[in-house]
Length: 244
Image 1 (cartoon, one colour):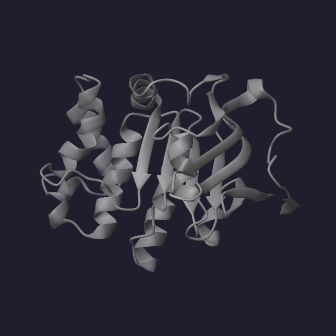
Image 2: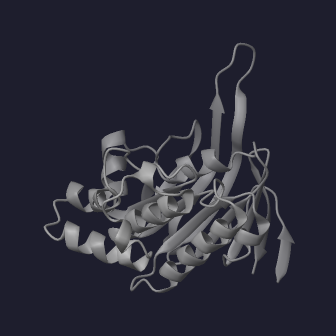
């Protein structure tokens, strides 16, 4: 393992053309009465297709905010974000949403399943939104991959936390996204289920036919070390990079 202390220019040496996502002097602040609350500051970052990247840091470091900026769920107040070398953060919400719908998957700490839908229907949803005629078949296949075929008709309230997160993983993978964002995916689970979900996540990622990029946000160093690269975030700044 090699470790290099860095300041604001983590991964700046990587070429723009090789980048899937590139942040340039990215900043995010929230207006307050006296002075702005700065959450992300002067952040430079390159993320390459197919890599497994962990963003590690304590609570309040700005990890989830950074993920939201990288995914285009929010827009920076300073700097810019590029997607495949083209402006991304300056697009309007409809344009960013169109890219997310085609190329991005999400796994959240709080599962984010629709309570009125069954497990199968939750997994089908991304494909149905695309008008895929094989949505049910593919969703069934992915539920089987996460070991929940027998729970297909159950609603989230009838599932354990570990089972809900496995449904969320199936939903994230079913559309075969180019980029998978995972925000504290084991944070709401006990240790045993957390390990099972982490094992499943990395197993499925390794077995995907395409070079899927995984961007994992966590405060769990053990989980982060399963990625190829770890970026340490403190007070909204990238302060170190570690290759595993």
